[in-house]
Image (tube, rainbow, N blue to C red):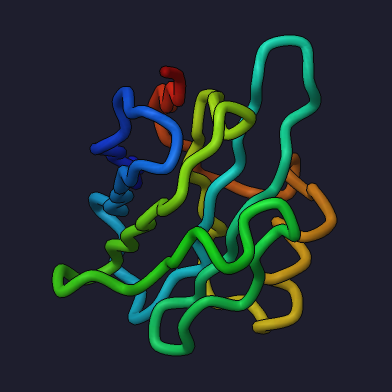
Length: 133
């Protein structure tokens, strides 16, 4: 059984940095399509980042491009997200999500770029990120 285990997050002042990590425990495939959504109170869930391990980051939302950096971690089927220059509007619950089995790179990108969250098979527990002074 596959489980996505999230870690990281927390509270920081505007301009600060935080990191998130997502590990696909129990996943036996060679590579995985994985990424993050976030949801702030009263707002729709937003697709932020798509990564295909072995290929790298495929998508960044306009709201985070140039500030967030996703990369494959050393551990297999684990992806890290470094969030720099954080703003109060980045405050949200961040959810890691992944697709079952191999997928085309464009499909992986579109899961997150087009908000196709119902097509994703695995979800993390959610991690709170709070940016305030």
